[in-house]
Length: 207
Ligand SMILES: Nc1ncnc2c1ncn2[C@@H]1O[C@H](COP(=O)(O)OP(=O)(O)OP(=O)(O)O)[C@@H](O)[C@H]1O
Image (cartoon, rainbow, N blue to C red; front, side):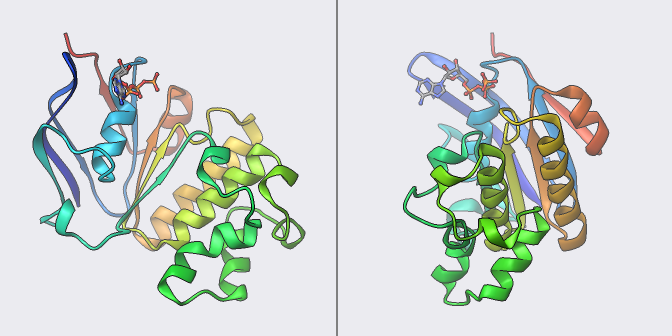
């Protein structure tokens, strides 16, 4: 279980999260929505350890996030162009977590690419040679390669068309349910969240 308790985040005088709680179980697909500025991205960053809250704790299986092994949570951003090295091929993008572990293999890279609907011919291309949707698929495959217990998707399909969105969400849901990975989908698209999540949490702007 990924648990956030009593999370408070302030940017200067602006309190964005106030005493917020959030839970995500392994294998569970959960939606997070809320109006712009309500703190969804801030919560995603807190859950993945990128932002340290002024107050509150995040634990994974009861262990404080700071002392849990790195890589337990993967974060997928809205813009894949800001999240990939422009000099790397898609094969390199996808295999990077395994390379860092010293376990990368071309077969694994192909299998991960297939899981997100990327064909072999795309894997030797660099980010500027593929579409946003293809690059985002590579980022999703890279998140799977990290072998995380939890994946947090921060509006990961917001800039993509309906067909690509559906394919990426299908891949995320399939991965979550077959590998016992908790998936948090942050989105303004309530119809999408209703269709593929078991629970939808809503953040409100702090008064
Ligand atoms: N690094 C930062 N420094 C100062 N203020 C910030 C910072 N990051 C976010 N904020 C502010 O915190 C509030 C919440 O931002 P956040 O991005 O978490 O909201 P959100 O719900 O994800 O919004 P959106 O739906 O528009 O993406 C906003 O008012 C934003 O301007």
